[in-house]
Image (cartoon, rainbow, N blue to C red; front, side, top):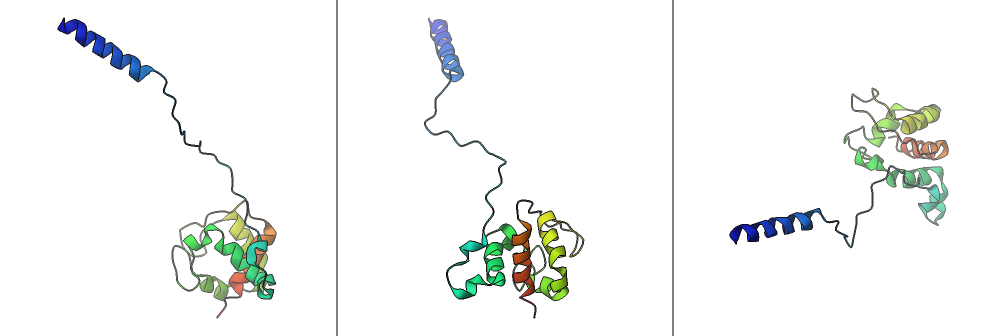
Amino acid sequence: MKRLFLTICVLSIAVISCSKKEEASQPEPETNVMLEEPTASTAGDSGAADTPEAKGQKLLEGMDCVGCHKVDAKLVGPSLQEVADKYTEADIDKLAKKIIDGGSGSWGDIPMTPHAGLSDENAKLMVQYILSLKK
């Protein structure tokens, strides 16, 4: 009798554990889709927000740049003021390409992540803002 009871319990557990369960809330599958690029139009309605520097600042703050760069202090990468002190207006295209393509070597061995979804125009606005921080 004990064997029969034990066998029924084991079979019941096996059937229950092998049956397909419907969950009420299934997590969304992870995707590799890039998020929409931030736009400079989110800068606001004030007159000062219409400058390329203000648009660039808003773009920079809306991206992952602030995770590695601070305005006045080194984090993972150089401070934005250090970048501004090193480069000039003649380097805008070079720096915009560096933001889009990423890279390493200019400030050490830690690579900067590429931002392939960023347009050249918005990258240049960000560089203009960075260069405006020159001391």
